[in-house]
Amino acid sequence: MDLRKTSLALLIAAMLPAGGALAAANDVLVYCSEASPESFNPQIASSGPSFVASSQVLYNRLITFRESDNLPIPSLAEAWTISPDGKTYTFTLRQGVKFNSNKYFTPTRDFNADDVIFSVLRQKDDNHPYHNVSHAAYEYFNDVGLGTLIQEVKKLDDRHVQFILSKPDATFLADWGMDFTSILSAEYADAMLKAGTPERVDTDPIGTGPYNLKDYKVDSLIRYEANPHYWQGDVPTKRLIFSITPNVSTRLAKLEKNECQIIPAPNPVNFDQIKSNKDLVLHSVDGMNVGYLAFNTAKKPFDNVLVRQALNYAVDKKAIVNAVFLGSGTVAKSPIPPNMLGYDKDLADYPYDPAKAKALLKQAGFAQGFTTDLWSMPVQRPYNPNSRRIAEMIQNDWAKVGVTVKIITFEWGEYLAGIRKGEHASALFGWMSDNGDPDNFANVLLGCDSINSGSNAAFWCDKQYDALIKQAKVISDPAQRAALYKQAQDVFHQQAPWVPLANGKTFYATRANVTGYSVSLNGSDFSKARLN
Picture 1: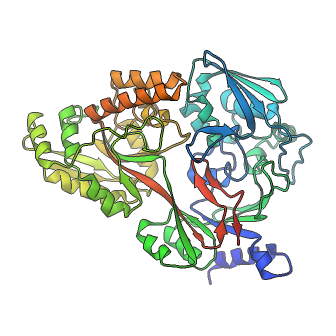
Picture 2 (picture 1 turned 90 degrees about the vertical axis):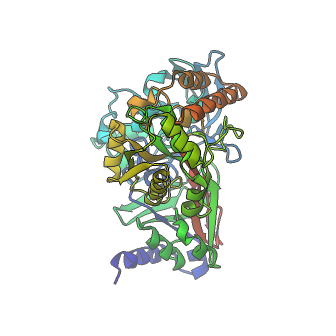
Picture 3 (picture 1 turned 120 degrees about the horizontal axis):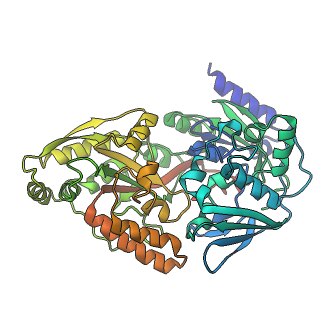
């Protein structure tokens, strides 16, 4: 007997009210999640499953992103102004937004400026009483540079908060739609601090989102109930359950048996199986991501631009995308995804041309080729659904031009640590958008400063490229920014620090009777999901 399956079934049955089965079934939605959350506070979490279970269910942020073009639009902030010098942002906060409650605390007031101040200063101020609670590192807050960018944050009145920046930064507004900027309750934090249990803010969360946490059993399930006074209106599904199911095949089996109604990230090899089942629907959205092979340009022979160009010509990217992505991706040629501001659709790509590759290797002094390592990711991502297979295909392509490849892989944490230290010669890697801004790719992945942060896996620093992306970061006009990013992509193409491989789509599957659920740059939106 599968005890976990039985316990989940019993829990669902216990939650259902007496009466008709249809009404009961329509009141409970089960989502098969990929993993347990690290924390229910998105300020201190770093994984996708943690954000889905916390910021995308329990909280809101000052802004959100419009699905049609991923530009910032109001959320908890209903409006904002930016000073002419680009260094002062003033947010007008939404009125009448209520926090949820739990068994430890019931709010006495609505959301206001104090909550924004608390949510920022806990992450920014080393001396804040909550800064070291739960051994928090605030990785995202620091990685995007908000700790140094925000010079001051102050409350003008209950409805207005002002940020003063150390320099203009066109990405600042978009940052406030990221998961780690979720707004927490300052009143709850004060109460828990006085009670001597400040960690409850992270383990027993209170937010303004569509659902409230009711129960959590580690590695088993999470139970939520709808927020009865959600500021965006009625939440149609009153009970939401996350059934924690790490195995991708098991998730699909549960979906087929109607043990869950939504699953993330089905395996591409199962797409036809899903499509052929009349009770299931396969959904896809264009992802803001890029998968790539990074050359470690700090190591020979990849410090030689001719070698890098040669090995771009030596990779049959179309064959890789056709064989591995199975319709879930398209060939990439730029560090910026196609659906993002500044993408240059006219940018030249390196065609598959082994003869050209051999000629460039000979010109670079490697007529007989060489031997190198290629690191292969141990995890599946939309931009790389089968890293080992991609590595093997590149290995085969490069062998045709005289380059012998040894494929290496590690556990994911060790893989990331090794790349940060520059231990690789070349490595398969990728990135998914945090905030919908091109700086999140062009600068974070290839800027000179990003070498120190560990996100520049190519260890590439080109002064011309870096000057262009830094200029784009401080200009607010979208057209001017786009023009600068197009120039930067031309430099990228010439210098070839990567082999851009693919832009992957994001897939999820549901039962056919699920409506209203969506996935976008904002993450998973359960607030309108229902069973029909």
